[in-house]
Length: 451
Ligand code: UD1
Ligand code: CA
Image (cartoon, rainbow, N blue to C red):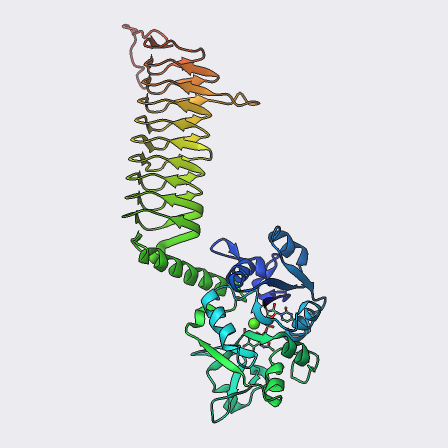
């Protein structure tokens, strides 16, 4: 049985924010949620130590089985874990984690936990080019771990050590409880240091195992907004690498952001500065051109999303082209072999196969059939200032440019609407309908001359 104990009571003063530190986001997911998600596959229970802003933290993770442990005053990492003693099962292996160390991987925790098996205690360390600020791992001549010395308590020689304590450890419940109870604030900060349990275990002849983490970024802590942005880039690069290994073509992983899940078929290409949010799925051979934002949408085979388009909560069929500069808003469904062109906004509408809305239109609350052509500048007038109304355009209709369709209104099958019409009543199938003032020319008219 494994238990996660996640420390997250620190104020996070350096974030300069009203938001609790562990609720800041990487890849649009809170730092704390990252840690919970990485530990979940290998633990049976999750304890989170909270302090300031505990209510907002609890609210963010509603619906998840988490044991919240309040640490009223922040008297050190040892004091934080002490608060969880009532919930620690003596026979369990406890994984100590940090709500502000979000990039830790399940695999690494798995290895750390298995290293802890023989003696009941293992530490995750990492080699740092610049170890400033971290606790140093002190080893004897046989390379066995002796203790951890904090930056502020370290001697000159100890400060030279580059192997540092990530803080993450795996320890048997019995040992953890025993040593936690023995902690004393004998240090320069007057805190209860969790790291002091190492020395106590060594005195008790517990052979502490260690696992040196391969990458410093995986165990990086977030203390300020610069580190938050660094973690975001590490996370995105990692995500991009995984997607590329699965076969996605990403033109420049440094200009790629996926804040959620992306499924894709064969031979999809993502050009630069594309942002994916939420759950998205692409068919085969989909092209997403530069500067697009795709959120919670599904795009079918062979479709092209042209530059500077936004697709939000929509389903796009196959062999369809969207953009450039198109905005597809929620609850829109666009069929196969269709086209939404530049400066077209579509909201809560369905457009079926082989239909085109090519230029400068607003289509809202509409149902458009197959083989429909909507000319440039057509507007569905769906709102009277109070209520929204539906427009229906039946199969094969042709809507002349710069027409307004005042909803509720139905355009008949194979109907043609003359350019520049304002349509306020249903129009019959197969006929030309237009509303237009008669054109006239004033033959005697002369341009005024400059006085
Ligand atoms: C700690 C370690 C240090 C390690 C470093 C890695 C100790 C004494 N030192 O130092 O060896 O190299 O982490 O980043 O453990 N927290 C609480 N309650 C408290 C104090 C802290 O929940 O009373 C939480 C913080 O929110 C934070 C984490 O514990 O997530 C670490 O605390 P912090 O004060 O940053 O420890 P460091 O001094 O950096
Ligand atoms: Ca820290």
